[in-house]
Image (cartoon, rainbow, N blue to C red):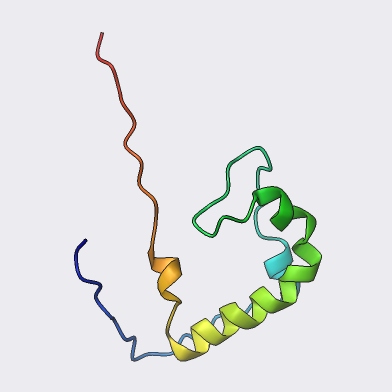
Length: 86
C-alpha cells in the first residue's frame, strides 16, 4: 500500500453556505445497493435522514471551516470489472 500523503489547505472555504435543509435534500440513496466503505446500509441512511441531517451539517461545516476532511473521505473502493471481448 502506498504511503498516505497529508495535505493541508491554507485557505478556508467559509464563503460556501448551506443549511441543514440542504443536507437533508442530498440525493436519495438507492436502498437496493450494498453498503459503502462505512458498512452502513443505504436504507438505514435514507430512513434516518432527518435525524442525521443536523450532525452531518455540523461535520460538513467544520470540515469547510478548518479546510480539512476526514481521512475516510479520501478513501475509496475500486473493484475491477471483467469485460469479455467477443
